[in-house]
Length: 398
Image (cartoon, rainbow, N blue to C red; front, top):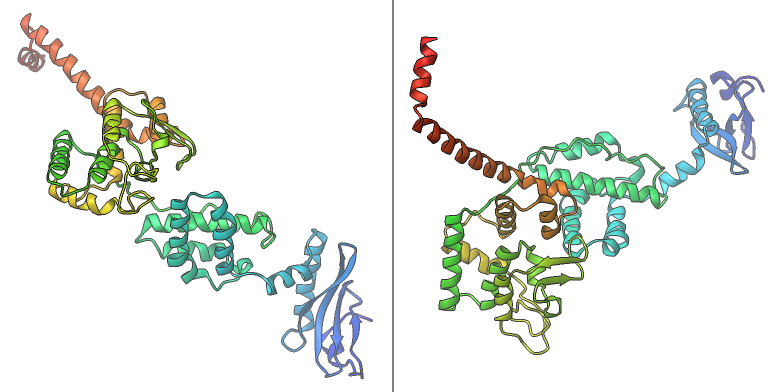
Protein backbone atom coordinates (compact mmCIF):
# COMPACT_ATOMS: atom_id res chain seq x y z
CA UNK A 1 0.00 0.00 0.00
CA UNK A 2 1.06 3.59 -0.45
CA UNK A 3 1.83 5.96 2.40
CA UNK A 4 -0.69 5.95 5.24
CA UNK A 5 -2.51 9.26 5.44
CA UNK A 6 -5.55 10.46 7.33
CA UNK A 7 -7.72 10.09 4.25
CA UNK A 8 -6.31 6.67 3.36
CA UNK A 9 -6.85 5.31 6.88
CA UNK A 10 -10.39 6.64 7.13
CA UNK A 11 -11.16 4.99 3.77
CA UNK A 12 -10.18 1.52 4.98
CA UNK A 13 -13.18 -0.80 5.02
CA UNK A 14 -14.37 -2.67 8.08
CA UNK A 15 -14.35 -6.46 7.69
CA UNK A 16 -15.67 -9.38 9.65
CA UNK A 17 -12.18 -10.03 11.05
CA UNK A 18 -9.34 -7.73 12.14
CA UNK A 19 -6.66 -7.08 9.55
CA UNK A 20 -3.41 -5.10 9.16
CA UNK A 21 -2.39 -2.53 6.56
CA UNK A 22 1.26 -1.53 6.26
CA UNK A 23 2.67 1.84 5.32
CA UNK A 24 4.48 1.93 1.98
CA UNK A 25 6.86 4.66 3.15
CA UNK A 26 8.08 3.49 6.61
CA UNK A 27 8.80 -0.23 6.97
CA UNK A 28 7.26 -1.69 10.11
CA UNK A 29 4.63 1.05 10.54
CA UNK A 30 1.02 0.05 10.07
CA UNK A 31 -2.59 0.26 11.18
CA UNK A 32 -4.86 -2.46 12.53
CA UNK A 33 -8.50 -2.29 11.47
CA UNK A 34 -10.75 -4.01 14.00
CA UNK A 35 -14.06 -5.68 13.22
CA UNK A 36 -15.65 -3.11 15.52
CA UNK A 37 -14.53 -0.34 13.22
CA UNK A 38 -11.78 0.93 15.54
CA UNK A 39 -8.39 1.62 13.91
CA UNK A 40 -5.11 1.59 15.80
CA UNK A 41 -1.54 2.44 14.72
CA UNK A 42 1.35 0.10 15.57
CA UNK A 43 4.94 -0.81 14.77
CA UNK A 44 6.24 -4.31 14.04
CA UNK A 45 9.90 -5.28 14.47
CA UNK A 46 12.17 -8.20 15.34
CA UNK A 47 14.02 -8.49 18.66
CA UNK A 48 15.59 -11.53 20.29
CA UNK A 49 14.78 -13.63 17.24
CA UNK A 50 11.06 -12.94 17.54
CA UNK A 51 8.58 -10.71 15.74
CA UNK A 52 7.06 -8.19 18.14
CA UNK A 53 4.42 -5.50 17.89
CA UNK A 54 3.96 -2.31 19.88
CA UNK A 55 0.75 -0.29 19.83
CA UNK A 56 1.14 3.45 19.21
CA UNK A 57 -2.38 4.81 19.59
CA UNK A 58 -5.88 4.97 18.21
CA UNK A 59 -6.72 6.74 14.96
CA UNK A 60 -8.66 9.85 15.79
CA UNK A 61 -6.73 10.52 18.97
CA UNK A 62 -3.67 10.52 16.71
CA UNK A 63 -3.34 11.51 13.07
CA UNK A 64 -1.40 9.33 10.66
CA UNK A 65 1.45 11.87 10.61
CA UNK A 66 1.67 11.97 14.44
CA UNK A 67 1.66 8.18 14.59
CA UNK A 68 4.42 8.04 11.96
CA UNK A 69 6.63 10.36 14.05
CA UNK A 70 6.16 8.12 17.10
CA UNK A 71 6.81 5.03 14.96
CA UNK A 72 10.14 6.46 13.80
CA UNK A 73 11.17 7.00 17.44
CA UNK A 74 10.22 3.45 18.43
CA UNK A 75 11.96 1.89 15.44
CA UNK A 76 15.00 4.04 16.21
CA UNK A 77 15.04 2.56 19.73
CA UNK A 78 14.94 -0.90 18.17
CA UNK A 79 17.90 -0.02 15.95
CA UNK A 80 19.83 0.95 19.11
CA UNK A 81 19.09 -2.40 20.72
CA UNK A 82 15.85 -1.52 22.50
CA UNK A 83 12.67 -3.52 22.76
CA UNK A 84 9.67 -1.14 23.00
CA UNK A 85 7.09 -3.92 23.41
CA UNK A 86 8.94 -5.53 26.30
CA UNK A 87 9.59 -2.16 27.92
CA UNK A 88 5.88 -1.34 27.77
CA UNK A 89 4.98 -4.67 29.36
CA UNK A 90 7.56 -4.06 32.05
CA UNK A 91 6.01 -0.67 32.69
CA UNK A 92 2.46 -1.99 32.87
CA UNK A 93 3.42 -4.77 35.25
CA UNK A 94 6.15 -2.75 36.98
CA UNK A 95 6.51 -2.58 40.74
CA UNK A 96 5.84 0.55 42.75
CA UNK A 97 8.33 2.39 44.92
CA UNK A 98 6.40 1.06 47.92
CA UNK A 99 7.02 -2.52 46.80
CA UNK A 100 10.67 -1.69 46.13
CA UNK A 101 10.98 -0.31 49.69
CA UNK A 102 9.64 -3.59 51.11
CA UNK A 103 11.99 -5.68 49.01
CA UNK A 104 14.93 -3.41 49.89
CA UNK A 105 14.28 -3.88 53.61
CA UNK A 106 13.85 -7.66 53.44
CA UNK A 107 16.29 -8.75 50.73
CA UNK A 108 19.03 -6.17 51.24
CA UNK A 109 18.92 -4.49 54.65
CA UNK A 110 18.09 -7.66 56.60
CA UNK A 111 21.01 -9.48 54.99
CA UNK A 112 23.73 -6.85 54.86
CA UNK A 113 23.08 -4.14 57.49
CA UNK A 114 23.52 -3.79 61.24
CA UNK A 115 20.35 -3.68 63.39
CA UNK A 116 20.74 0.05 64.07
CA UNK A 117 21.12 0.74 60.33
CA UNK A 118 18.06 -1.38 59.53
CA UNK A 119 16.07 0.52 62.13
CA UNK A 120 17.08 3.84 60.55
CA UNK A 121 16.13 2.59 57.08
CA UNK A 122 12.69 1.45 58.28
CA UNK A 123 11.98 4.82 59.88
CA UNK A 124 13.06 6.72 56.75
CA UNK A 125 10.98 4.48 54.48
CA UNK A 126 7.90 4.72 56.67
CA UNK A 127 7.98 8.45 57.39
CA UNK A 128 9.50 9.97 54.23
CA UNK A 129 9.76 7.77 51.15
CA UNK A 130 6.51 5.80 51.11
CA UNK A 131 4.20 8.76 51.89
CA UNK A 132 5.64 10.80 49.00
CA UNK A 133 6.62 8.25 46.36
CA UNK A 134 5.20 4.91 47.47
CA UNK A 135 2.43 4.71 44.85
CA UNK A 136 4.65 5.71 41.90
CA UNK A 137 5.91 3.09 39.45
CA UNK A 138 9.66 2.56 39.68
CA UNK A 139 10.14 3.18 35.97
CA UNK A 140 8.09 6.38 36.04
CA UNK A 141 10.04 8.26 38.71
CA UNK A 142 12.09 11.05 37.12
CA UNK A 143 15.13 12.96 38.29
CA UNK A 144 12.96 16.08 38.57
CA UNK A 145 10.66 14.24 40.99
CA UNK A 146 13.59 13.18 43.17
CA UNK A 147 14.97 16.73 43.17
CA UNK A 148 11.56 18.03 44.30
CA UNK A 149 11.28 15.28 46.92
CA UNK A 150 14.67 16.36 48.28
CA UNK A 151 13.81 20.08 48.15
CA UNK A 152 10.52 19.59 49.99
CA UNK A 153 12.52 18.27 52.96
CA UNK A 154 14.90 21.26 53.00
CA UNK A 155 13.87 22.27 56.53
CA UNK A 156 15.35 18.94 57.67
CA UNK A 157 18.63 18.75 55.71
CA UNK A 158 19.94 15.63 57.42
CA UNK A 159 16.68 13.74 56.75
CA UNK A 160 16.55 15.02 53.16
CA UNK A 161 20.10 13.88 52.38
CA UNK A 162 19.68 10.46 54.01
CA UNK A 163 16.36 9.85 52.24
CA UNK A 164 17.89 10.58 48.82
CA UNK A 165 20.87 8.36 49.60
CA UNK A 166 18.52 5.49 50.46
CA UNK A 167 16.50 6.12 47.30
CA UNK A 168 19.67 6.02 45.22
CA UNK A 169 20.64 2.69 46.77
CA UNK A 170 17.18 1.29 46.08
CA UNK A 171 17.25 2.39 42.44
CA UNK A 172 20.68 0.74 42.01
CA UNK A 173 19.23 -2.48 43.40
CA UNK A 174 16.21 -2.11 41.11
CA UNK A 175 18.64 -2.17 38.18
CA UNK A 176 20.35 -5.27 39.60
CA UNK A 177 16.97 -6.96 40.03
CA UNK A 178 15.89 -6.16 36.46
CA UNK A 179 13.16 -3.73 37.52
CA UNK A 180 14.80 -0.76 35.84
CA UNK A 181 17.17 -0.30 32.91
CA UNK A 182 20.89 0.03 33.65
CA UNK A 183 22.38 3.46 34.40
CA UNK A 184 18.94 5.06 34.84
CA UNK A 185 19.12 5.91 38.56
CA UNK A 186 17.25 9.26 38.93
CA UNK A 187 18.64 9.84 42.46
CA UNK A 188 22.30 9.97 41.47
CA UNK A 189 24.31 13.17 41.86
CA UNK A 190 21.56 15.06 43.69
CA UNK A 191 23.20 18.08 45.31
CA UNK A 192 23.02 17.52 49.06
CA UNK A 193 22.02 20.19 51.55
CA UNK A 194 24.69 21.49 53.87
CA UNK A 195 24.43 19.83 57.27
CA UNK A 196 25.43 21.61 60.44
CA UNK A 197 27.44 19.05 62.31
CA UNK A 198 26.21 18.58 65.88
CA UNK A 199 29.35 18.25 67.93
CA UNK A 200 29.52 19.00 71.63
CA UNK A 201 32.62 18.50 73.72
CA UNK A 202 32.84 18.57 77.48
CA UNK A 203 35.33 21.03 78.93
CA UNK A 204 37.51 19.98 81.84
CA UNK A 205 35.12 21.73 84.25
CA UNK A 206 32.15 19.90 82.70
CA UNK A 207 34.00 16.58 82.87
CA UNK A 208 34.59 17.21 86.57
CA UNK A 209 30.89 18.02 87.14
CA UNK A 210 29.84 14.86 85.35
CA UNK A 211 32.28 12.78 87.37
CA UNK A 212 30.91 14.18 90.64
CA UNK A 213 27.29 13.54 89.67
CA UNK A 214 28.13 9.96 88.65
CA UNK A 215 29.92 9.37 91.96
CA UNK A 216 27.02 10.87 93.93
CA UNK A 217 24.46 8.79 91.99
CA UNK A 218 26.44 5.64 92.73
CA UNK A 219 26.82 6.54 96.40
CA UNK A 220 23.14 7.40 96.89
CA UNK A 221 21.84 4.51 94.85
CA UNK A 222 19.79 6.85 92.64
CA UNK A 223 21.17 5.01 89.61
CA UNK A 224 22.25 1.40 89.25
CA UNK A 225 25.98 0.57 89.31
CA UNK A 226 25.63 -0.80 85.77
CA UNK A 227 24.12 2.42 84.35
CA UNK A 228 26.73 4.60 86.06
CA UNK A 229 29.57 2.31 84.99
CA UNK A 230 28.33 2.29 81.39
CA UNK A 231 28.61 6.09 81.24
CA UNK A 232 32.07 5.98 82.83
CA UNK A 233 33.14 3.44 80.22
CA UNK A 234 31.85 5.58 77.36
CA UNK A 235 34.08 8.40 78.58
CA UNK A 236 37.15 6.25 79.21
CA UNK A 237 37.08 4.17 75.99
CA UNK A 238 35.44 6.34 73.33
CA UNK A 239 33.17 3.41 72.44
CA UNK A 240 29.77 3.76 70.84
CA UNK A 241 26.83 3.40 73.19
CA UNK A 242 25.70 0.12 71.62
CA UNK A 243 29.17 -1.37 71.99
CA UNK A 244 29.16 -0.79 75.76
CA UNK A 245 25.49 -1.58 76.35
CA UNK A 246 25.77 -5.00 74.67
CA UNK A 247 29.27 -5.79 75.96
CA UNK A 248 29.71 -9.42 77.03
CA UNK A 249 32.15 -10.82 79.59
CA UNK A 250 33.71 -13.09 76.98
CA UNK A 251 34.86 -10.01 75.01
CA UNK A 252 36.98 -8.68 77.90
CA UNK A 253 40.72 -9.24 78.27
CA UNK A 254 43.04 -7.44 80.71
CA UNK A 255 44.04 -4.95 77.99
CA UNK A 256 41.34 -4.99 75.29
CA UNK A 257 37.70 -5.33 74.40
CA UNK A 258 37.58 -7.94 71.63
CA UNK A 259 34.32 -7.16 69.84
CA UNK A 260 33.44 -9.81 67.23
CA UNK A 261 31.12 -7.37 65.49
CA UNK A 262 30.45 -3.63 65.57
CA UNK A 263 29.32 -0.85 63.26
CA UNK A 264 32.60 -1.20 61.35
CA UNK A 265 33.06 -4.95 61.80
CA UNK A 266 35.38 -6.78 64.17
CA UNK A 267 37.11 -4.38 66.59
CA UNK A 268 39.91 -4.63 69.14
CA UNK A 269 39.51 -1.69 71.51
CA UNK A 270 42.22 -0.70 74.02
CA UNK A 271 40.97 -1.11 77.59
CA UNK A 272 42.77 1.29 79.96
CA UNK A 273 43.46 0.10 83.50
CA UNK A 274 40.89 2.55 84.92
CA UNK A 275 38.18 1.16 82.64
CA UNK A 276 39.20 -2.44 83.34
CA UNK A 277 38.90 -1.89 87.09
CA UNK A 278 35.38 -0.48 86.66
CA UNK A 279 34.30 -3.49 84.59
CA UNK A 280 35.74 -6.04 86.98
CA UNK A 281 34.02 -4.41 89.98
CA UNK A 282 30.56 -4.89 88.47
CA UNK A 283 28.33 -7.62 89.90
CA UNK A 284 27.43 -10.48 87.58
CA UNK A 285 24.22 -12.46 87.18
CA UNK A 286 24.49 -16.25 86.72
CA UNK A 287 23.41 -17.26 83.23
CA UNK A 288 23.54 -13.68 81.91
CA UNK A 289 26.53 -13.08 79.57
CA UNK A 290 26.21 -9.27 79.52
CA UNK A 291 28.33 -6.80 81.50
CA UNK A 292 25.83 -3.92 81.68
CA UNK A 293 22.77 -5.47 83.30
CA UNK A 294 19.20 -4.22 83.52
CA UNK A 295 16.01 -5.84 84.69
CA UNK A 296 16.08 -8.61 82.09
CA UNK A 297 17.05 -12.02 83.39
CA UNK A 298 19.30 -12.92 80.46
CA UNK A 299 19.77 -9.70 78.49
CA UNK A 300 21.60 -6.37 78.83
CA UNK A 301 20.28 -3.01 80.04
CA UNK A 302 17.63 -2.07 77.48
CA UNK A 303 17.55 1.72 77.87
CA UNK A 304 20.63 3.69 78.89
CA UNK A 305 19.10 6.95 77.70
CA UNK A 306 16.75 7.32 80.66
CA UNK A 307 19.46 7.28 83.36
CA UNK A 308 21.62 9.50 81.13
CA UNK A 309 18.87 12.13 80.88
CA UNK A 310 18.62 12.24 84.68
CA UNK A 311 22.39 12.38 85.17
CA UNK A 312 23.06 15.09 82.60
CA UNK A 313 20.30 17.23 84.13
CA UNK A 314 21.92 17.02 87.58
CA UNK A 315 25.28 17.91 86.03
CA UNK A 316 23.86 20.93 84.17
CA UNK A 317 24.67 19.33 80.80
CA UNK A 318 21.18 19.13 79.30
CA UNK A 319 22.44 19.88 75.77
CA UNK A 320 24.92 16.99 75.85
CA UNK A 321 23.98 13.80 74.02
CA UNK A 322 25.42 10.46 75.04
CA UNK A 323 27.32 10.33 71.74
CA UNK A 324 29.04 13.58 72.72
CA UNK A 325 31.01 11.57 75.30
CA UNK A 326 32.65 9.82 72.33
CA UNK A 327 33.35 13.22 70.73
CA UNK A 328 34.92 14.34 74.01
CA UNK A 329 37.19 11.29 74.10
CA UNK A 330 38.38 12.00 70.55
CA UNK A 331 38.96 15.70 71.24
CA UNK A 332 41.04 14.96 74.36
CA UNK A 333 43.03 12.37 72.39
CA UNK A 334 43.87 14.88 69.65
CA UNK A 335 44.82 17.59 72.16
CA UNK A 336 47.05 15.02 73.87
CA UNK A 337 48.98 14.55 70.63
CA UNK A 338 47.61 11.13 69.60
CA UNK A 339 48.46 10.44 65.96
CA UNK A 340 45.32 10.56 63.73
CA UNK A 341 46.09 7.12 62.27
CA UNK A 342 46.24 5.62 65.76
CA UNK A 343 43.09 7.45 66.81
CA UNK A 344 41.28 6.12 63.72
CA UNK A 345 41.95 2.57 64.95
CA UNK A 346 40.98 3.37 68.53
CA UNK A 347 37.69 4.99 67.47
CA UNK A 348 36.86 2.36 64.88
CA UNK A 349 36.35 4.90 62.08
CA UNK A 350 35.99 3.52 58.56
CA UNK A 351 38.20 6.21 57.05
CA UNK A 352 40.74 8.77 58.19
CA UNK A 353 38.58 11.67 57.02
CA UNK A 354 36.16 11.02 59.88
CA UNK A 355 38.99 11.16 62.38
CA UNK A 356 40.42 14.34 60.87
CA UNK A 357 37.22 16.21 61.81
CA UNK A 358 38.85 16.58 65.21
CA UNK A 359 42.09 18.04 63.81
CA UNK A 360 41.18 21.61 64.84
CA UNK A 361 41.90 20.58 68.44
CA UNK A 362 45.46 19.82 67.39
CA UNK A 363 45.62 23.29 65.80
CA UNK A 364 44.60 24.80 69.15
CA UNK A 365 47.33 22.86 70.92
CA UNK A 366 49.90 23.99 68.35
CA UNK A 367 48.74 27.58 68.76
CA UNK A 368 49.12 27.41 72.54
CA UNK A 369 52.56 25.83 72.23
CA UNK A 370 53.69 28.49 69.75
CA UNK A 371 52.35 31.18 72.06
CA UNK A 372 54.30 29.73 74.97
CA UNK A 373 57.54 29.71 72.96
CA UNK A 374 56.97 33.28 71.79
CA UNK A 375 56.35 34.44 75.37
CA UNK A 376 59.63 32.94 76.57
CA UNK A 377 61.54 34.46 73.67
CA UNK A 378 59.90 37.84 74.17
CA UNK A 379 60.82 37.70 77.83
CA UNK A 380 64.44 37.04 76.94
CA UNK A 381 64.44 39.97 74.55
CA UNK A 382 63.04 42.29 77.19
CA UNK A 383 65.71 41.19 79.63
CA UNK A 384 68.33 42.37 77.15
CA UNK A 385 66.83 45.79 76.55
CA UNK A 386 64.62 44.93 73.57
CA UNK A 387 60.87 45.35 74.12
CA UNK A 388 57.68 46.10 72.26
CA UNK A 389 57.46 49.69 73.48
CA UNK A 390 60.92 50.57 72.19
CA UNK A 391 60.21 48.86 68.90
CA UNK A 392 56.93 50.76 68.39
CA UNK A 393 58.62 54.04 69.21
CA UNK A 394 61.39 53.28 66.73
CA UNK A 395 58.85 52.42 64.02
CA UNK A 396 57.00 55.71 64.54
CA UNK A 397 60.27 57.63 64.14
CA UNK A 398 61.01 55.85 60.89
